[in-house]
Length: 134
Image (tube, rainbow, N blue to C red; front, side):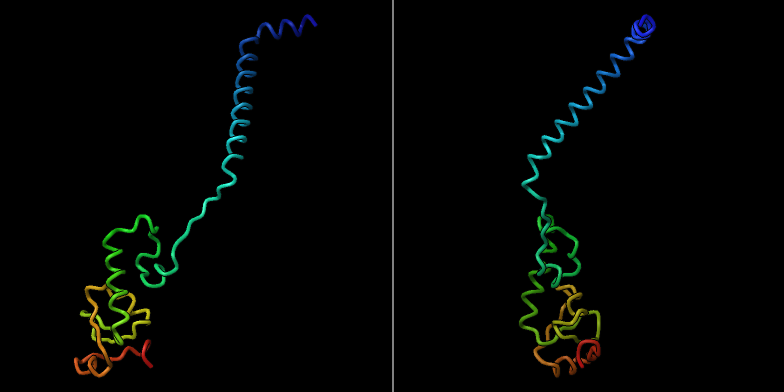
């Protein structure tokens, strides 16, 4: 018994610091546990409109809230042109595509050339894209 008292007296500061650290850690853990229960009713949901990914592949990984106005303008222009075009070409290419073709969707709106029928495109020296038009 005498030996234990002597040991406690010589290491009193270290024991007090250790006990204090343990109590602070335990209190922090319990506080965190209580706070986490408050937020359990609100799950984090990340939504992305399917339309953005399908119609504009270059914006596929940009969240809806942070898309730049330039990208929004481009997708709006593309949507406006596609319904009125039966065939689409690019200013920098001699191919002609269907609007549903993946190559047509990758053409920037400012480079798009719209054709009402295939004969108009062929008269301008364009070639049929065999991947799109069979």
